[in-house]
Amino acid sequence: MNYRLMKKVNQRLIAGLFLIAVGLPCLGQQGWVATKVGTEGLDLTAVFFLDEKRGWVGGDKGYLSRTEDGGRSWVRQLVETTGGINDIYFRDKEAGFLLAGDTIFATRDNGTRWTEVRRFLPREFDGAEVELYSVRFSSKKKGWVVGSVSKSDVVVDSILLFTENGGETWQRQRAPSRLELIHIDFDNDKRGWIVGTGGTILATVDAGASWTKQESKMTGTIYHVDFRSEKKGLAVGDRGTILRTADGGLSWTPVEIQKRSTLLNVQFVNDKEGWAVGRAGTILRTDDGGATWLEQESGTKEHLYGLIFVKKVGWAVGGDGMLLRYQQ
Image (cartoon, rainbow, N blue to C red; front, top):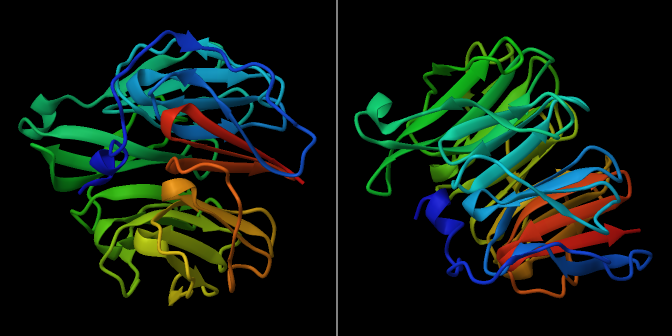
């Protein structure tokens, strides 16, 4: 099952009117506190916060909402798409990007307005459909997008895009893998990593001019990668897979955990603390740089797709409009 289909596993038909989430309960409470955002039955698959107050969540059918008060209230924003929003990312306080299906959207005014920058049509790919999953910038001008090319829901190629003018235009680069590429992360302007299906890990040390394969020693899907420095990184994936590296990915070591749920997102908070989320409401925490992990109480069985921490405050999003907020 490819990543796009996996994210739709528990999707239900759209029902009801869209709701604004108001009055996030118990914001002072420690731990993860749940609320709902958006239209009933729609999954939230992406979350990004610029600071502890301003953030966005996105999901199925082009749903996008913005908060200015740390998640206490949300206001829907209109994006000209019916594609599912897979990623939201801001290069700085004004310039942001979101990926919805086969389209890249951008904002230059702190997310007030979103405009289409580039759409990849089937006629450009011999009738195949493009799905864009992850966007990151390594510098003010240079950014990257990864995804897949599919025919009849069967992945036939990867897609790797780059911009050298701040996202005004995007060009395709051939990746050293035709497997589905799901997430990209840069530690600095030179060093970056891409993960995907078939245990794929690709790395660059020359600002994306070239990409080389790294050995993950696994065949399952790796959904997310996060580097704390150019040496120290974590990657997560199928059936509770957690991979850890201390040498920039020259070697990846599996971390044994009891939880077997597929993990979909991981993030370092500092050198020691990190979090991972995944299917069936799974939340894991490490306080030793990823060497050991403990399961945390999430209060939900919805799949959790997106995760972000800003200082000591975290947000996770998932199925059926689920939004979790963590306050230390």
